[in-house]
Length: 260
Image 1: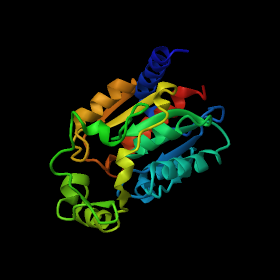
Image 2: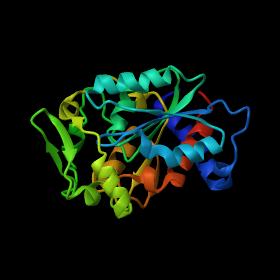
Image 3: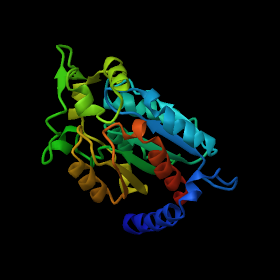
Image 4: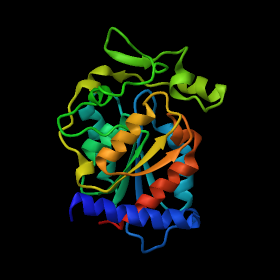
């Protein structure tokens, strides 16, 4: 099946599921082929932010696993994701947030992956880097990364909430700020060797109030990879502040792929 036809089929199935609405709230049927979800965080965060999405999906009957990326190299993060994918007992939906989109683009060629969901995420092509994605549409000025002498970067403390988590409470933003995981900035210059979105049906959650990745870039990326797009009024941490909406898209992807 060609990528164009595959994405058209996925889009039609997604539309049918989203139209019903209530379907996404029901426990998945026993015969559904895709019952596993693997969640991949991005830079400056860890997997704990997925808790809301995890709770919703597990309540619907999914087995949900969360990757803890070391953020030391793209190869290390892809290996961490592959390690979790290899533990799945059936086809899975692979989900990535932000830089995690680069990770799932590379790791998504795993045969256990039935479909991809990009959550306010990047999706490079073969030979492109994470940093290349910002060449024409740079990050908003509110998003400031400070790089230390060892080459690892943190989000600026003063602008953290504005640039990264604008729709969280002050307390939640402070916790995210003070628990952020630094990323080896060399990762942003590492080219991708595989582009799983060329072979697997894809969905994209676009956070319309994102101040870390310009929503125009998110839309451009979704269009380029042929993803079924859903726009959500939220900041960059849409998975944290709008877990129901994000979980619904993942649920839709799982129901639509059918393990094919």
